[in-house]
Image 1 (cartoon, rainbow, N blue to C red):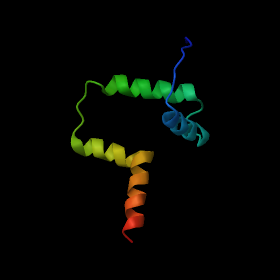
Image 2 (image 1 turned 30 degrees about the horizontal axis):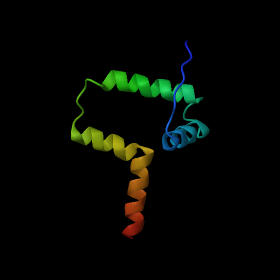
Image 3 (image 1 turned 45 degrees about the vertical axis):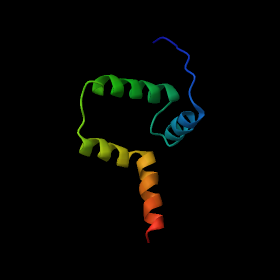
Image 4 (image 1 turned 90 degrees about the vertical axis):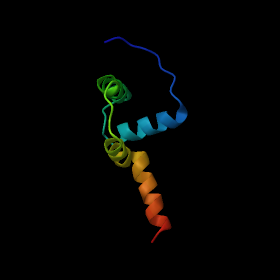
Length: 74
């Protein structure tokens, strides 16, 4: 493996750190490597809207949105 330097926006770094602290990834490097592999594998594929929406709703950002909606509409 080769080492590289990456300047990460603070909001993304916060999310990255949350994922590693939850134990979803063993390190920042593993998270970034997984993200790059996912991007390269899927960059040429066109996901349909339903799949994109499903992926978003399953993400932490999507879960937060659903929780906000539920709290506003008891």
